[in-house]
Length: 421
Image: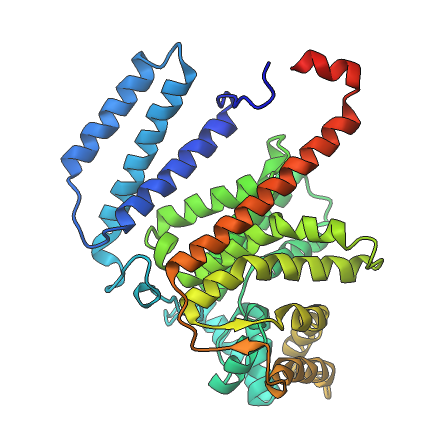
């Protein structure tokens, strides 16, 4: 067997992965002309032909069946975008930063029990803390956007906006807290999974179903669901599934939602380059927490910098340094902040949280005192962004190739390796 030969997908998981990628491709295809109508008759014909081809002509050749199913999935993607087109934001334009639709990523205005609970908690925070600290605490805990614009700009220049945006770390905290509470009841895995599902749904409704929240919640739910059905979760596949689910719900987000793109790219960086950075820093940084924090910051920053330069016209080189200083504070702010909000009648209960919040605010301000390292009002061409991501992709593929060669040379003896070629 030739070592470089590509094997056709033969499992349900691999075929589903190809179909998910094809559905995203169909959404992207319609996104190139978001205001143009597509013939539903033509889509129905393509879908019907794909199904018939897969059933009758793809029995003996698996690749033909997979191609037919991918064409079907792409047609479904085009159809989903067409159905959602009347309710999409206006002015969407591909490949231009001015054509993006920026989601609020904040609290909604619906009069629901979750919205009212959030308003009560926010009012308590505003009563216990000064405005800047209250806005930062509610942003860290559940993504409330109450920070003054000046502080937002400082955090953006410092590369710390992810601190006040609900993401995977918040979902992780929810899952860990629920699991810790359930451990006292000795529930079965199935009942624990149901409780975690309810907690994740309540959390999404509480903070608002924005792009980063939905993506993180879907991945967190899939990570808990996979062992229940006897599967080992693969983070890259979970990322694809979360992208498919969210894009099917909000198809315009795939190409036009900046918050979804940044959330997806940051997670992609954590799954790819962060591991490579961690391996190369192992000899230089012996402390595991510091090494993993630096590696995660480098991986996420590496993947989000090109998009941020194109979409927002801003670059900062301080995000790794500020993240390294700020991330350890987030857990302390979460614990002390929740304690202060849960027991507002206890004297001086807010003092520990206030101390941590003031330190975090100072970290967000200090890059302004340095005249270099932050560039604003940039005009970054779309082609430049694509070229940078192509370079990142080539580097990642080379790292994967070297890793496969190392693992192959270690795991397979020389006399047996010849039998595989």
